[in-house]
Image 1 (cartoon, rainbow, N blue to C red):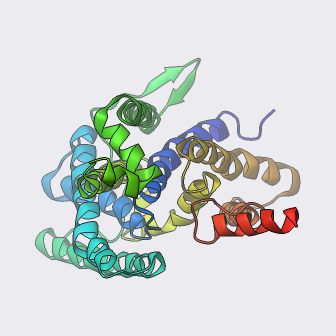
Image 2 (image 1 turned 90 degrees about the horizontal axis):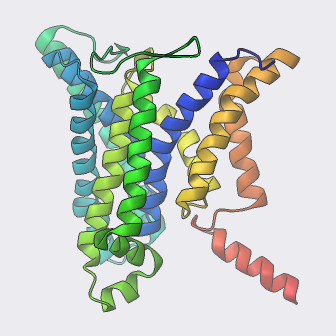
Length: 319
């Protein structure tokens, strides 16, 4: 019998939903723009705090309103990052490493801006926004399946994740804009020669990717017991590990990575705790061990150094 069943299974599925919503957009943004974006954590956090401010200041208790608002806020943030930081650096001939460092600067800046906003909101209404409790939304029902109670977060996570994945698939595979995104991802130079407006496609991609991460952040407020301005930062290890499993280029393998990391962190730790009394606080260690193994055994194709490393290894073997 699985330790903690069905609790471990439900948590495994819940974390799978969240890791899909957080990691798929990171992979999609990299394969289209080639930017390893550490500010991705801010998209999650600002999605969280869009829901928090709507609830704490305006009294909103609708998850639909919270997620749509979070999508727009985080999507606009992602577009602003590109327009005011990444694109000017690219025009000046900056390397991808320099742009990655710029994204780290944005990551730190956005953290301090959010603390400032939380302090302003506290001064306005006297409520603590630095540490905010779980939000109960009234527009998502609780389900009972075979005697097992499924929380509103589980129901919403299943619905939102299914809708996002299906929508992304139809967009990328069946629409003209989606095919343009794939063309820019596969060969930016050839796509421009073919008449595809690369700048517009990149802007659209950033908006979608930031928006999905922000939406996932808003959903997180219905699950996490407490959120803070560093909640997105706390998940960045798992998010990058999942995307690295996908090589930062494959959405399918990123999805598999989300399932694998969620399994390791929930069912895997449950077994280790049951058999060897390993504390559940070792979850991040298991994720870090997975990430380290991936980087040593099979460097991501999309990560800086991954493809050249494999190419050089192949040439050495041929000699």
